[in-house]
Image (tube, rainbow, N blue to C red):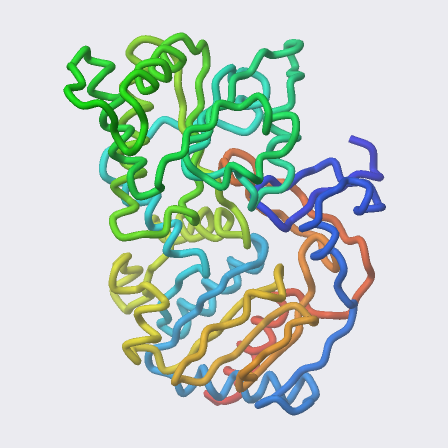
Length: 408
């Protein structure tokens, strides 16, 4: 790839074809998030402070904490490694800002496994794609990058089916060609279960399911059966209702059943805010996904107990280190405990944290690596704007040095 192209860290696609002039790519998310100042101001309780004072205050908070929480975790591989080092040293619990959505997927995966594919396979092979409860609007170039008609093997006749989701936001030309079936997100699991039953030849003794006529269910089933390489995609972040993990489980099971006659795979959309990267690094280090506590006996995985929102709401954390180096809108939640924020220099707080240390943005101010949403490749991030801001890893290392002085 020519040196003039680089990767974008601001969604799970990690598009690696961006030119120097980002606006030419036509991605509003990239245009907005690549616009970031190269300098920032440390703050202590909302007032300006020099970096040394901010580090001292942060070190004092963490040194005195008995139940710290390291959360947010929107950064690159090196930042995640440093965050886990600090968590291990302080006995902290660790969770990502997108933990609830990640947990819905993990429950389905841990319960019975799943069959998933890669973005490259979707673009090059998938002739039928189902978007269940989403039109991938959180990933602005998904249609352009993954569902464009051309593949490495020539033009590909592709059929797109949208089950629910904000259908009005389908981009052209898919808005006119996709088969769109309005289905409430809360009933997607029900529809998938009926499709599984019909696959085995069981009768459908009702006129409709989830608002979909029985005749249309059978018509969709024939499309699924005739696919040479089908893909069912969902975004767990948009399936935000009680029992959503069971809906994902129903989708995963439908994919498994379809593979008895043809080839199908799932595609869990995600990776925004570095959540795929965080999960990968945590698994390397601990053998578990996120929502881990570092205890004297070793890492402890408790995905319900160590939910960051639950810990803060219950007052079970006495210090919060929030890492958010990618999107300035992802500020920390309010909490009764002291909050330390390592964030983009353009973050604005309604309620200032006890400590704010501006950090470099991966892929803008610093080089690094992040994992794409499909988890099969880590893409390099390059420096685009010179900055003296510390990286997340450097900021954490400096705080740990201050902690050593406190301990001494």
